[in-house]
Length: 207
Image (cartoon, rainbow, N blue to C red; front, side, top):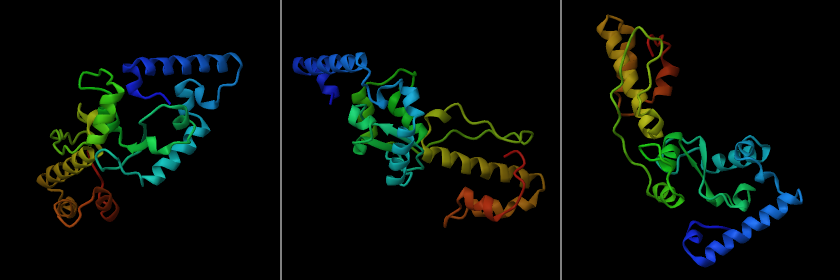
């Protein structure tokens, strides 16, 4: 198994070269396993779907970086045993925002494997969000430019802030049927957006 540290030592380089030669030989003999396909093809494979379901279930769909809802399975290593589903400890459930932060910096440059791992282990705890821009003429509100790099926690906070502002705008226009939703959103005992939408059958104009 090749590790990031191998790139910084003579013995490590030798191990990498040896593994490359072995892979080339296997390719020439037509003996490469399923996971040696093109990576995108691998992500569409039944093998990856089984691994992903297993890891998401293990982690209860909780992002291991921010603690919000996670739907992405992050490879902490691309070693053959990990890709073949034999080392799930090197796979982790994360949200899309944390995954983007781990792999790319603010300028879009790809991070090194060491930096990606450091960010994953350090976690993401930010809760600040951009102010939602509300336009009641729209059926749905535009996501902020920061959305791709917002964690699941930040996205949930933004959605709740958006819903609160929508209610306030509608109430200001005399649509008092939105007051119960606003009251529930402001309830510290658990104003969860999904619960609000389930309990109150109020049309989400401009939502």
